[in-house]
Length: 192
Image (cartoon, rainbow, N blue to C red; front, side, top):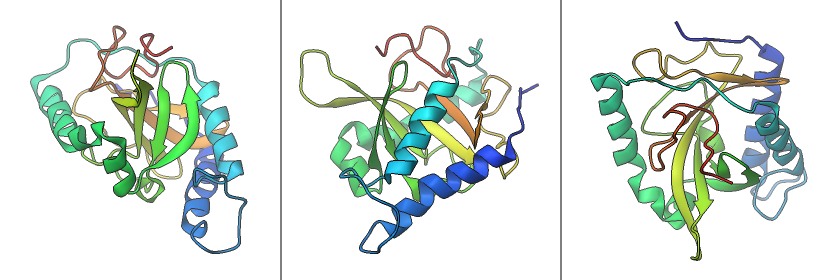
């Protein structure tokens, strides 16, 4: 059975702090906007949220159906190996680097409580050792806690994490860089 934690306040605050600045940043007065497009407040929320949790349960042997779903997620996100394609599709630099996850590119319009394995809310990137640019390493699904925990992938291997005190559910899927602790483990020790 999947493990769930309830935190309605966290989800509401996160949705308001993450999504609303993106919707008001284009030419309207509102929250202060940093150069990367996220409001200063939203960036702070993301930093605190990702520092609140250090790990999630590792997955075991994945079912054939879960493996097919992961393949669909890979196929749908393959074009995002080029960060410019991610930007063109609405992902913005969250100005957030987290050890164990990497750089966060967020599409705030996708944070709606609906799980779509082919449209992750966040793309995770890591620096390419000895090269310029970023390498796509994982996808992160985010859902407001005001909604029920999404079903997610088939089976019980994906464990959505609550990130108190913020009202969001988060699920990482390491589909582009192997995570020795499991596909759905929150942090990857290969990301410094």
